[in-house]
Image (cartoon, rainbow, N blue to C red; front, side):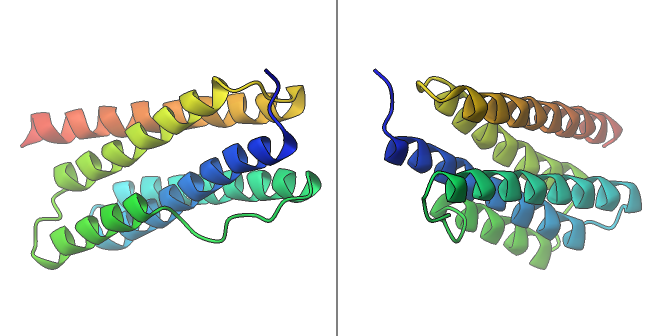
Length: 152
C-alpha cells in the first residue's frame, strides 16, 4: 500500500532527527578525542550528517511538511554518555569509536526501516544514497575501532 504524503514526511523526519543525532554525536567526539586524525574523521562525518539533514529538510519542505527541529531522545542520551565518558577520562580512542559505532548501528537500522516503506521514486533514491553513506560511515568507524582495539 502506498504511503500518504504525511507518512513519507514522518519517515523523512525520523531520518532527519537521526542525521542530526549523527552530526551532534560526531561533533562531540571530535571535541573530546585527542588524536588529530580521529578528530578530522569525526569532523568530516559530522559535516556529512549535516549535509544529509539539509537534504532531508528540503524534501520535507517540498512535500509541504514541517521539518523536525531536533534530534531523538536516544541520541541525546547517547551524546550525554559520550560527554560523561570524556569528563571522567574514559574517552580513549577505542571507547569513542565504540560509541560512534553504536550510533552508526542505529542510523543504518533506521535507513533499512525507511527503505521497507513504499516511497516515491525520488525520495527512495535519496534515502538509498544516504543509507549507503551511513553504511560506509559504520564500516569505517568499525574498522578504526578494530584497529584501536588491536593496538591496546
